Amino acid sequence: MRISLFAVGRLKAGPEKDLASRYLDRLAKAGPAIGLELAKLVEVQESRAANAETRKREEASLLEKALPDGAVLVLLDERGKALDSEAFAELVGRYRDNGKRDVMIAIGGADGLDADLRQRADMVLNLGSMTWPHQLVRILIAEQLYRAVTILSGHPYHRV
Image (tube, rainbow, N blue to C red; front, side, top):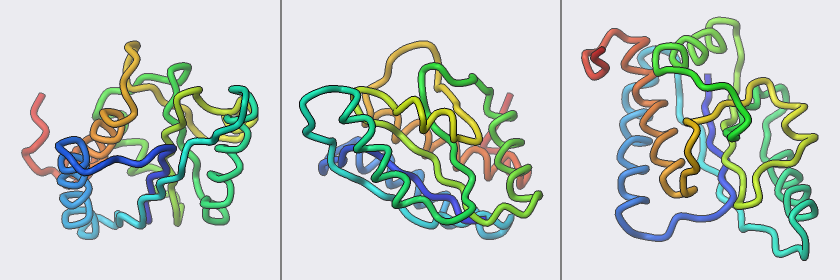
C-alpha cells in the first residue's frame, strides 16, 4: 500500500525538515517489508484568498487534485478522533489488509480544513487536544507512520 502525505505549506531547511525527513526515510526503508511504501510528499502553497472559507476551499481543491483515484483520505484535524499508536498502526494495517492501494494523509493550512473535505474523508484524526504548529505536525505524523511500521512488524522500537 502506498502512503502519501499532503501538506499545506512548505518546510524550509532546518531542524524540523531534517527530523521529518529522518522519519520518512525510516518509513521508506522499513515499510516495504510489510507491504507499506512511502509514495510521495505533496507540499502546496497556502492560499492567499481574502477570507478563511475561500482559502480552505482552494486548499481542498489542491488536495483533491493530488489524491489518487480510490485513495483512502485521512485528515488531521482538531475535531478528529484521537488514537493511540497501537490503534493507529492497526488502522494502517487494516487499510493495507483490505487491499487499499493508496492512503493520503493530509495536513491542512493555518485556517484548518474545508468542511466538505472533512465529510468526504475516510478518517479524521487528531494528534491531541493541543494546537500544534504545522511543522511539528509533519514530524509527529511522520514518526507515527514509522512507529506503525515497527508495531506491525514486531520491531522493538515501540515499547509500552
